[in-house]
Amino acid sequence: MKLDLSTLVIQFLHGLTYGMLLFLVSSGLTLVFGMMNVLNIPHASFYMLGAYFSYQILQMIGNFWVSLIVCPVAVGILGIIWETSLLRRAHAGGHVQEFVIGFGIFFVINEAVKWIWGTQDLPVSLPEGLSSSIMILGRVYPVYRIFILLFSFAVLALLAYILKKTRLGITVRAAVSDRDMVSALGTNTQLVFMLVMGIGSWLAGLAGVIAGPFVNTYPGMAFDILVDCFIVTVSGGLGSLLGAVVSSFMIGQLYSFGIIFIPRFAIVFGFLFMAVVLIIKPSGLFGEKA
Amino acid sequence: MLNKTGPYLFLIILLILIILFPYILPRFQLRMVNEIVILTLFAMTWKMMLNEGGMFSFGHAAYFGLGAYASALGWIHIQDLSFLSGILLGGLAAGFVGLVFGAFLVRLSGTYFALLTFALNQLLWGLAWKWRSLTGGDDGLGMFPKPDLLGISMQDPRNFYYASVIIIGICLVLCWYFTKTPLGNVIMSIHSNEERARFIGFNVQVSKMIFLAMLGFYAGISGALFAQFQEFICPTVIDMGRSTDVLFMAYIGGTGHFWGPAVGSGIFVYLSEYLSSYTVRWELFFGLIFIFIAVFAPQGVVGIIERKK
Image (cartoon, rainbow over all chains, first blue to last red):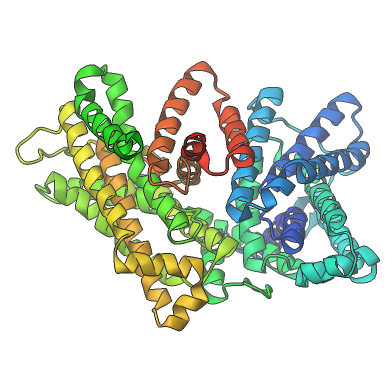
C-alpha cells in the first residue's frame, strides 16, 4: 500500500471513529465499575441488544431517529431490571459470583438473540441524510462516520457536564472515591446504583444503535465489543472517564495503523497494550486505586 | 459408624468403578469419562487458584493450551520423544510461563488480576492463531506421534484411559498434598490476610509465583494429555471459551470442595454432549444453569450435597 498523506489521514479518521464508538460503549462500563466496583459483563450484551432493537424498529417504522431515542431507553430499563433483580443478590458474594452471574446473562442473551433474529449478519441501511459521502483530500469518506464522531463527542461532553456540574454527578463521583461515606451521609446509594446502571446500559444501547449501520448487526458483536471494552476500560483505569477517552483513542489508532503496518499480528495489539499497561501501572493509565 | 466409614466406602467403590469402566462402558462413553478425568485436573488448578490462593483467573486456558501445544510440537519435532517426556514437556512449558506470568500477576488483585490473566491468555491465543508456520494457525496440529508408554500401546483407548487416570491421579494427590505442605499453608495464610502474612515475614510475592507456576505445570499436564486424547489441537484449546469452560466446571461443581472440580467437569462434559445433541442453542441452558447456581447455590453441586447431609 502506498503511504501518502491522504492514506494516513483517512486511516487516522477510521481509527478515530472506531475509537469514539468504543468510548461510547466503554464509558458506561467504566461508570458502572467506578461506582459499584462490578465488572458488568452483560454491558456488551446490552450494546448488542441496542443494535438488534434498532434493526427491529427500522424494519417496522423505518425511522432511524425514532430508534435512536427509543432503543437506548428500552435497554436502559433492561439494565435496571438486571441490577435490581439479580446483580444485587450477587453483590454480597463478591467478585466471582458477580462475574459468574454476569457471564450467565451474557450467554443467555447471546443465544436468545440467535434464536430470535437468526445467526446471519443483518444489514442495516444508513439513515437518510447520512448515507452520502464527502471528499477528504481526494478520498471518498462516508458522512455516517463523521456523524458517529460528532455524536460521540456530544455524548462525551454531556457526560462530562453531568459528572462535573449536576447533583447526580457529584454524588456519583463522591461514591466512586468513598462509597460507604456517601451512604453514611444519607444518600440512598441503592437508588444511585440503580440510576447509574440505567445510564450505563442506556449508553450501551445508544452505542449499539449507532454501531448497527457501521459494523452491521450480528450475534458475535457482543463478544467482539466485550473484548475491546475490557482492553479500554482496564488500560484507561477502571472508573476513569478520562482514561476511557484516552485509551479508546489509542486502541482505535493502534488497530487502524496496526492493520497497515503489521497486518498479521494486528489482533494481538490490543492485548499487548493492555498487558503492558497493567504490568507497568497496575491501576491503569488514569486509575487511582488498584 | 456409617459417618466414619462412609467416605472410605465411597472412595473404594469409586476406585473399583474407575478400574472397571473400560469393561462396562461402551466406547463413546469411555471417551467421555476419559475427557472428564483429564479436565478434572484442569478444573482443579482453577479451583485451587481461587479457593486456596484467593486469585480469580480468567485466562486459565493459557496454561492448558500451552501444555497442549508444547507437547504436540515436542512429539512432532523431537525424534523419539517418549510419551511421558512429551507430557512432562507440556507441563514444564506451561509451568515456566506460569512463573513468568506470575511475576507480573502477583502485584495485582481482584478484577485487575482477572483481566491481566485474560490479556495474557489472549496474547498466547493470538500467537497460536497467527504463527502459522509453527502452530498451523486455525488448521491446527494433527498427526503427531502417539508413542508407547513403557511398551504399552497408547493407541488402544483402554490403555490410554488407564494411563491418563494414573497420571491425573498422581497430580491430584500432589495437589491435595500441597495444601498440607508449609508452602501450601503460607499460600492460604496469604489468602486470608496478605498484609499479616507479609508482616510475619513470609515472602508473599515469591510464594505466589511458585504457586502460580505449580498450577501452570498441572494445567499444562492436563492440556498435554488432552492433546493426545484428541489427537488434534487447534486454537480453541487456548481461547477464551476454554477459560470460561473451566470457570463453569469448577464453579458448578463447587469451588470450596476438593471433589468440586471432578463433579463439575463430569456435569460439564455430559451436559455439553447431550444438550448439544438436542439443540444448537445449548449455551442458553448453560447460561441459565450458571445463573441458577450463582443465585441459589454459590457453593456448587457438591455444596448442595453436603448441606443435605
